[in-house]
Length: 183
Image (cartoon, rainbow, N blue to C red; front, side):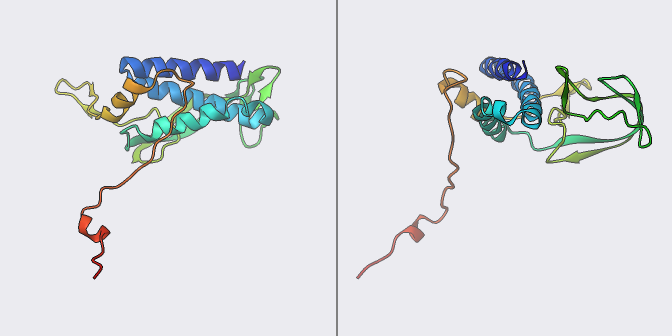
């Protein structure tokens, strides 16, 4: 089911990109990326069926203009296991491991009590959805990013399973250095 979810999320992100919903697509790609990570932890053979999508997601994310993200420091006071609903602590471990599947359910911690300690601006976030946006004139979030590279890609990218790649080249500011005078 998770592999099917990966394909659905990836296709959904492609449609969102086509419509120009860039931030929404970014979040959808992160959800697909997290599902792929769960597959990697639980079934290496199944990962082979979504490996190409994983590489393509990384390519797409690399051409996004996002460079600043919020990272929160949270003091977790209480959390429960999503499998057995028991309270977890250093002294009380139910034995279920976060990120692993038990009887078809993915184990996670459910935070039931926490305190926000700080927020930092980082370039390599744990939670990629925490993109830093500017405030608009009315105090609301304003998307100020330049999506021209993504927009150009979406004009030529026909379907999500037609994989593509790119190459970064730099423009030489001194073209005369490329030539040698031979006498």
